[in-house]
Length: 141
Image 1: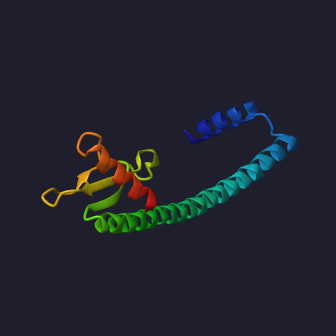
Image 2: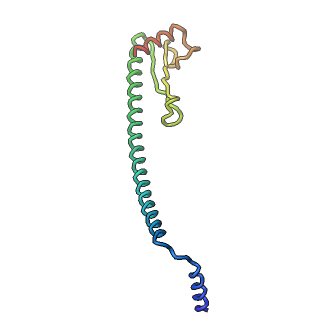
Image 3: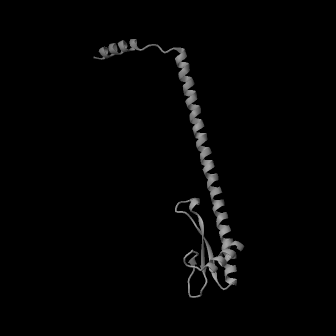
């Protein structure tokens, strides 16, 4: 039984052609290229990770700058409105997604009568004079 298997394998071995030196060299060269490409991929992955960290830091700096600017505008606007016996605030409206800058905006809240609460500045709620005062004070802030 074993000798029969050996004979079969020997017969099959005769059908396998010999590998040339050139073919062996090509395989070795392909292995070198593969190893180099694997190193390149690892380097690129590290670069992507580094860039992602830098982007996250820049993103945080940008958001902090926006928040600081809105806080400053809000503080000044509130003071100016208070001097005229009104109340007002400026808030940052953020988008639904992180870094959804196209949906960022400022929300201006005003109160012109003591019985009222702060309300968003809209075309239908405040009078033309109230909107004008608000706009002028916002620009000054």
